[in-house]
Each structure stands twice: as C-alpha cells, then as structure tokens.
Amino acid sequence: MLPEKVEEILNVQIYKEDYSSQLYLSMASWAENKGFEGVSNWLYNQAEEERMHMLKLVKYINARDGNAVIPGIEKPPVDFGDVKVMFDKVLEHEKFISGSINEIVVVCIAENDFTTQNWIQWFVTEQIEEEASVKTIIDKLNLIGKNNLYMFDRDIMSMRGTEGETEA
Ligand code: FEO
Image (cartoon, rainbow, N blue to C red; front, side, top):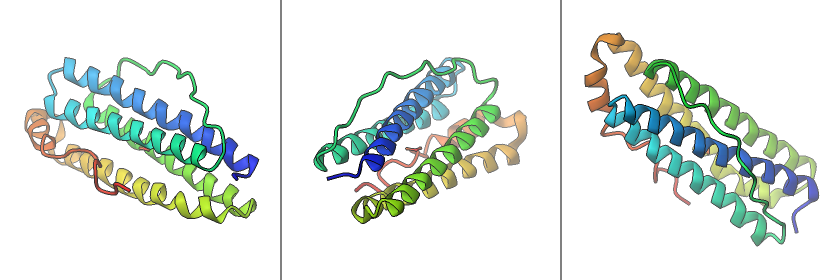
C-alpha cells in the first residue's frame, strides 16, 4: 500500500510527464514545419519517451493499490523562437523534472516508503541521461553557430533521444 503523500506526489508527476510529452510534441510539430527533419524526429521520439514515463507511473501506482489519476493537460506553447532557444527550454524543463524526481525521493524517505524510493531510482538515472543528451545537443549548437543549422539537423538525425537507454 502506498502512503498517501507518496501516492499524491506520484500523481503530480503523472501530470508533469504527460505535460512534457505534449510540450515536446508541440516542439516537434514546430520544428517539422520549419523544415528541421532531424530535430523534429528527435522531439517526436522524446514525446513518446515522456508518455512512456507517464504510463510507468500510472501502472506503478495502481500496482501498489493506489489510484492513478489521469489529468487534463494545459496547452503547451506553439512558437519556440529558434532551435537554440528551443533546446535551452528543453534543458530548463528537464532540470525542472529532475527537481521533481528528487522531491519524490525526499517524500519516500520521510514516509519510510523504501519500495518506492528504490523504484524511483530508474527515473533518477533517466534524468541524468536526459539532461546529458540535451546538453550534448546544445554544445553542438554552440559549436556550429547559426550558419550551419542544416548540418546540425543532419547530425541530430542519428540521435534518437534517450529512447531505450534505460528501458526497465
Ligand atoms: Fe520524463 Fe524528460 O522527463
């Protein structure tokens, strides 16, 4: 049985993962319409990853006799300025998500829920990988400057987000 506070914060995380999925889907659509095939592929994959994270939480809560609540999601932005500004936003968002996962760990410890504390470690590792992946992309963008975005887009085509790296 999940402690109430753990169930509550895991349900909040469902919302955040679901919103992340919608945010990256909106970014993917924006990038696709700008002609950035590689960038949009990366983002479509990332949107799928976030949906998988959301489902993982839903299934865990229900498996522990809790009630997973499927939230309504606010509409994400539709315009992201330029590719560099957009990836800066992705990194900022992932740091926010990492902070949320850390909060879950804190609540698990406070509630003596060591099962969930152990289970949530998968997300802790996943966040390290996600932040690192976005930082790599931003480093590439900083190296090439604005003049060679076409080459950057080809380059990112071979990156498939963090898909499968830490599949549980
Ligand atoms: Fe599921 Fe990118 O955090």
